[in-house]
Length: 344
Ligand SMILES: *Cc1c(COP(=O)(O)O)cnc(C)c1O
Image 1 (cartoon, rainbow, N blue to C red):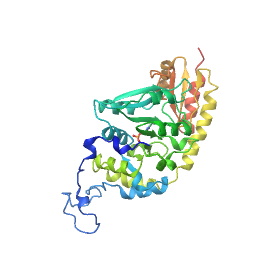
Image 2: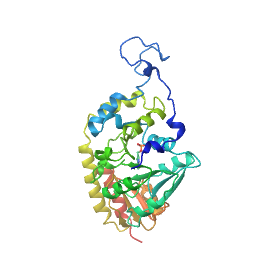
Image 3: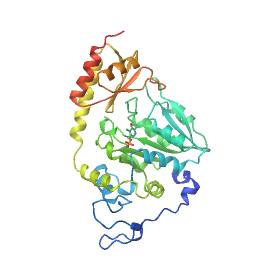
């Protein structure tokens, strides 16, 4: 079994992190004259907790993961970027991902000057396990998997993901941004079985907090410690920590069930539209459909005030539009427009 700590960049392993005023003194009673803050209390004049202890305690309860195995970032973007900065030597190391998938992995790779080797999904959007494993070499550090996958909307079977995690000789980053909409269970409950696994989740989708920017990474404690050392000390601001903590008190079961029920209705209705060639199965809060003239259909939707994502230029997504599941009324309006377009 690989030891992921051995994959960490030399300069990161020996990093002495910035020490905040709260590192030096942790009590919560007293007169704070140690952080050069403005003493006038307006609710925001103090620096946030750099370790997000209250937030992690709450997330630990909800997710059933030890708080020491949780990293919180400024959206999922932060742990994605940190993965490159922690493990990949620019200009030398490489990572593997599937394609089509979430575009952020490729952007983060480019920013960090790290080669990304994209392995195409099969025509039914299933994993090509042999090709993925064959794509790595001695300088391969990371494998990005996204399940349910964006934009294809399908989940990959758990046993295939596990096979990749156990066979891949680097760190596997499993992006579960849409897991709450999925029939499949998260791999989080098995996190401690796989030392080279990092699971990403987010509060941006099922939890409805995209505007607050809160992404989660789950991994063994020593990887989380390294991420914490590398991050900006105050990466989650006071307002986000406060509001998220409050919002986490409300269950997402009902709103998620509503979206999943709407997804079922939308898929059934889309399948009846003459203009729709194919509706891909979905385990997420969006559906991927195939049409003959994606730009034309896209423009007709725009003319009717409905904005979807044109994914037709992406490799493996010819003719594809990605449609997010909205409210019942929004979905009905979208379907009315698509129903009204005659087939070519
Ligand atoms: C939307 C999405 C995210 C969430 O990103 P945030 O930065 O947390 O808002 C992560 N991964 C995938 C695949 C997504 O589609």
